[in-house]
Length: 122
Image (cartoon, rainbow, N blue to C red; front, side):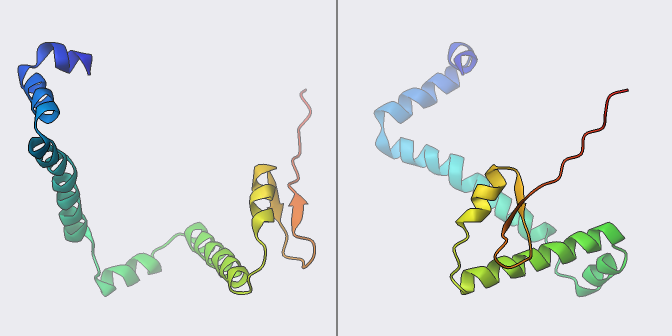
């Protein structure tokens, strides 16, 4: 930023104006925040395809590992949402994640350490 301050007279003018004038400050903040947001929204709307034929073709041509990960993620999300609906305490999920552990699917045995195998150096 010091490069802008030292070399650019227009940047110094903008800084002075935002310091001295609240309306200019709010106008500049709006231009810097709302205009890029509006442009981004328009780009997302233009590039978003809700074509059913394209979606079915992409699903048909998906790789097996992608399909498997989608299935696993759907199962995990279903399990998590079920726990939330039953109002179970899920804080141990975060504790397990911080310890590098993973959850089991067995009831009453929720946390299980991950198995790490080390190969001997030869």
